[in-house]
Amino acid sequence: MAGRAAAQRRVPENESTIAYVQADGLAVMKIVKHCHEESTTNMDIAQGALLGLVVDNRLEITNCFPFPKQTDETMDEDEYQLAMMRRLRRVNVDHFHVGWYQSADVGNFLSLPLLESQFHYQTSIEESVVVIYDTQKSSRGFLTFKAYRLTPQAIEMYKEGEFTPEALLKLKVGYENLFTEVPFLIKNSPLTNIMMSELAEMVPEEEGAKFLDLGTASVLEGQLRCMMDRVDELNQEAIKFNRYQQLVSRQQQDKQRYLLKRAQENAARAAKDEPPLPEEDINKLFRPHPVPPRLNPMIIAGQINTHSQAISQFCSQSLAKLYITQALQNAKEANANP
Image 1 (tube, rainbow, N blue to C red):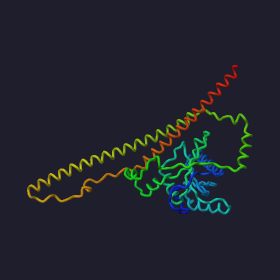
Image 2: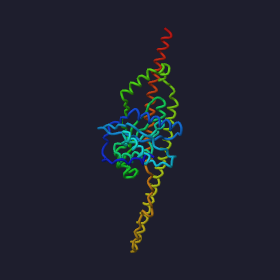
Image 3: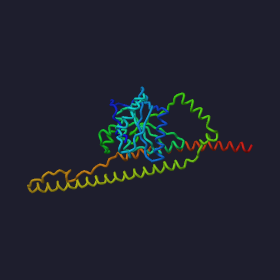
Image 4: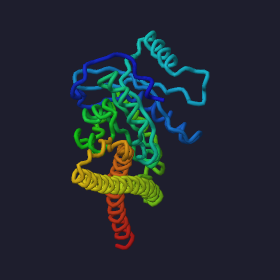
């Protein structure tokens, strides 16, 4: 869906000049609202366009709007986005396209469509980013916004269109350097900060003390299940590649036997003063097996790495929370029994 949206302006391709992404509170709340509505009602992935501008080495996100749903066949997506940006320009709102956003479930966002969409964006709008919002982690109290950009190696890989092991090795592309993460900051106006301080004081004491929720087993279980599924997929890809290597090895042995047999026959014919056998194209006799693309296994490996990092971070936070509650419980018991 997002891949067809990047057709705004061309800029020279060079190294990333974006040091960090700064998002206004209004744009953040719009993304949060849209992603949670889609996850609770339709269980679909929410996607939308990011609007803003580039100031020095800072990418500012000041507004956004959702993409139309795929089920609505009567609406043309490109026309919808152009119409939205025209209307925003009329009311003096930043209307420059600077990227897109997508929802994720327990960090499960890395996929082939996401890479393709970001490639189209970044080759059309060089400073564009993709912002990932994790609905599950945020609902547990961990507001998770991350901004990513494709690395120059990944862009070159997509331009060449070859995903063989030799091509990936030549470009030195691996799952660890497909994307580069850009720091994501949320900035509110002073008036908004004052209002939030006033609202925090209005929260009843009993409602604002539930920050030490120890029910982390369900979140950890979901992340482990996702990682196990990705490990199974990676194992299937490894089996396919091992089968390809076995076929290539067997074909090479057949070629060697054929060439040795032909050399012996030519030697026997030469001893009889007979002309040698006509030359034949060996590639027609032994057609090379197609090389399985390695892009999908690389994406799966990157997703496993993302899950591993999320689990490590989540466990560290949970352990810190357990130690804090243990200290509070010890202090409570000491005050109860003077």
